Image (cartoon, rainbow, N blue to C red; front, side, top):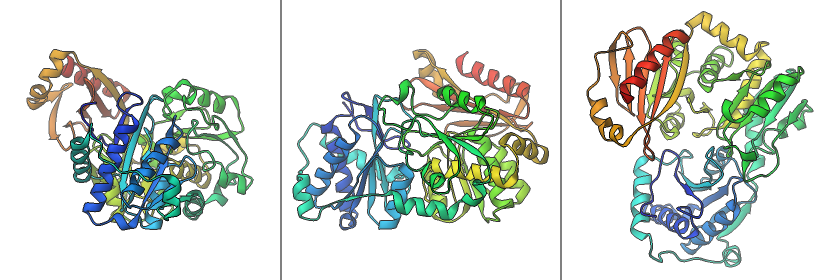
Length: 472
């Protein structure tokens, strides 16, 4: 291990290689020192974990380090969704929380996600400070631990159930009376933390549902716990095979991402869900405000915003930037193409549980399938199709990448480049409304290529041009 580095959602590593008890304790001590330097150590912290191997053990070790630093710990009794931890930060007014999660990454990964007192993912200035402190301490005994027994005896440790207050809030924000009329639902928490969250409100109201992958499995059934079309073939097959199922709802390992399966078994791209919910929240719920999307997210959202006359905030990739706008009460909804969203009046963090319930409410109240709602939206604002590819780079192409994107062509796929946006990666806006985005991975020789156009044919042309530009 040579360096601790925080990405868009915390520090992640492969267990037993980078992600070891010693390195975790260094990172926790760095967070404790950051809170102490900010004068927030007296507010306490929440510690949670997802369903990954040794998650509760890592949480317990972190609690010892915080207690050793004199910071009170609220330790979640069971694996807990990321949005629930965010909700609990705000409810208890703590200095923040750490969650042991690698979200949708494969099972060999784990991570430390730090969320400060405002409830969203830590902003870059905070993670830079934590990184600097941690890297100065790597390889050096730097933390003082207090046993869990002594921490409890001195009231520096309190075990908590974070579910009840969050679920009560969800029931106040979602029309479950409408959902009760939808018919049968299918649920898939992907062996993750949404067990007991996706199903509890439905059980209470006797809404019929079938639930799969709802037991603990740190291997996540042999797939990454990501509710994307590529990883939930069994769930898609279930929805297709049962004509009574009206909607399939899935979440990822820490329940901050969503996956939606329409009644006919069609997987609905998250980009389209965000646009549909924006339209629904303004038109039916009568919510007021703008919309935020990351630079990689569909401009179908922009078309809906234009229809309703509301502003669009384009952010770098990373939900912390959208969370800030939620905290400032500027937006009705904020979302990312990677299946994260939240809404006005809720936590400034991705919430896959809320997203699933909102889609069910929308389908129930509108009386249409998701596909029918999408076709109606296309008729009103125009059709948009979107795609993402990963382009692997040779060592030569990787070395030349910065120079290449620094000298862009005047046109792509036969159309002039109207504008270039560099808030995160390099985004080319074309005169016909199509666009391309190149984002270099920070951890591997890969360029993420995003594209959007009004037809599948045009999208294929744009993506091919983008691929050729990078690889040729």
